[in-house]
Amino acid sequence: MGSTTVRQGEQAVLFRSPSKGWMEKSEVFREIRQIVSLLPEAYEIVVGTDSQVRNRHTSFVIAISVIRPGSGGTFFYYPFQEQRITSLQLRVYMEAFHSVCLAAELREYLKDHMLSIPIRLHFDIGRNGATRKYVKRLMQLARANDFEADVKPDAFGASTVADRFTK
Image (cartoon, rainbow, N blue to C red; front, side, top):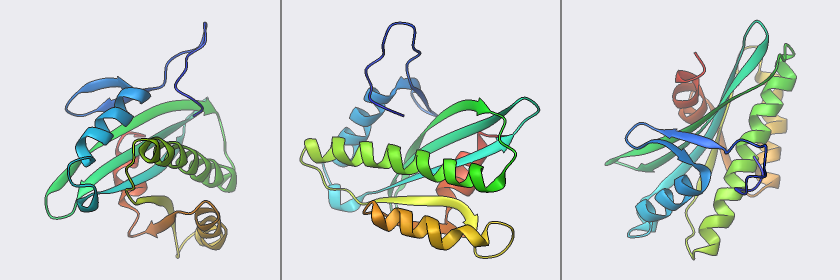
């Protein structure tokens, strides 16, 4: 993900908001700050990533959900493509890496603005099926980066929100 500075020849990181359209990452971070700043203790933030293998590439979507339990919320998603990755293990680890990086960047941004909002990671893996062997390592990755994490069926940020836009 990197910083929000765009060098000549590079494309800006553009997120999509269902209500505001395309937004640069810096705008998304500002919007999240504005949403949570009045009642920071009432909100939680979830970051999850999903991917789908296509013929010539792998489509990724990172989603940030801003939730006020009992009152709804909003989300932003960043779609992008990388080379075709057929290894399930590599895709699962790349999804987790992208989620951790964006969540850490958002946490720092909020901290710089004197806000401490819990950010949870949602991994698109489960305790059953082909991805069960990655649960322990990815939960360790989350803890090592000071995040709480959920897996399916509780990982809606990856398995529902991000998944919706990889199709």
